[in-house]
Length: 240
Length: 217
Ligand SMILES: Nc1ncnc2c1ncn2[C@@H]1O[C@H](COP(=O)(O)OP(=O)(O)OP(=O)(O)O)[C@@H](O)[C@H]1O
Ligand SMILES: [Mg+2]
Image (cartoon, rainbow over all chains, first blue to last red; front, side, top):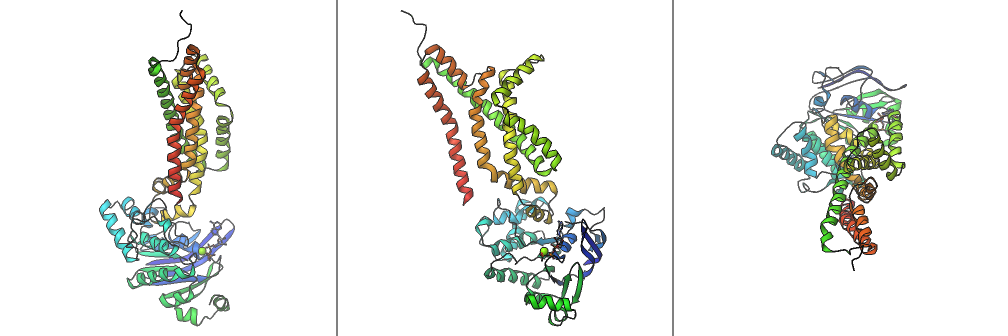
């Protein structure tokens, strides 16, 4: 379970998150929508301890993410993250991309790490690409590799930051299908997305971010189909 | 009637090979240390703030802009003058290593900087530590990216090693110089020496082109 309490985050003088409260239960899917610069990515980075926070608290399974005593490298193993840019490791084959972290971070044996990597790659439909170098693949395939690479660490949560935004339109579908698959597996996910239709379809909760606060939050029916706030309505009318 | 000069003969082979060997060995030493130090200095430069960078850059600029021949003479004379004369090989290796380090550190720095911050964040998000990210991600990607430029520096170090002859190191050029004074056959000998340098360097540059082509795919 992820609990976010009154989180404030500043970059210098710029306050990017101004008191965020959120709860994500095991097995739930939360989608975060909102305009550019509203702080969506920043929140994911704070959950993953890539960024620190100035005020408030983020608790992941009883671990206080930003407490001094927290071992953040270890914490990140619980939280898989996929970014807008897929960031495939270009010097490693597809299989090595997915097997590296299990081997060097989790200290699995070479065979075990290759075993989990193969499993996850097959799961996202890259079973025939083990020995290919990622730069030879399409963006959609590389993004699925990024998902498999994160899944190979067997995380309890997955954080997705606009993972289809940099893709050619015809490649978006295959990546969204992979997310649907994860949802069916019961993975707990936070998806920052501009794909409103997709958010409505898969989410348990939707949060609309506006200038560092959660303007509106609820089920997809509430937030996307019947938004109450004017800012939400305006945003949705622009993107839908 | 005996001549003052004795023509080049097969008996000189051993002498020439010693020169070849000495050129190879000092090049290998200088390229090896230059690379090792260059990776470290290049990494420090990629990671540090402007102040440290300006300081380091200034020092490296000295190595890069003072002609190698002057560095060699200054260093070996100074070391001798303060009472610690060094073998020409040792003095030459030190100067040539630092000289190649100065060029290689720039090469490696640009390699490390070519690995985007987002790539490092992706690695950290998988649970890798700072040092794991460096050794498994940044180093291999950065080194590959600059391999062709590194090879260019390495090849020029091989050629520059000829200058170590000025402090008395018996490498290929000095060897041939002595042969020339004895035999008075400069044309044959210098062409031979040129061919030797070519034989040492050309396979390397071919290999570099091969790797470059392979990586461009
Ligand atoms: N490292 C940083 N240093 C300074 N400012 C930053 C940094 N990262 C983000 N910001 C600023 O924080 C604000 C929120 O950025 P963030 O990336 O979280 O927005 P976002 O909601 O993800 O937007 P987008 O939809 O464009 O991705 C922006 O104004 C951005 O310029
Ligand atoms: Mg963003």
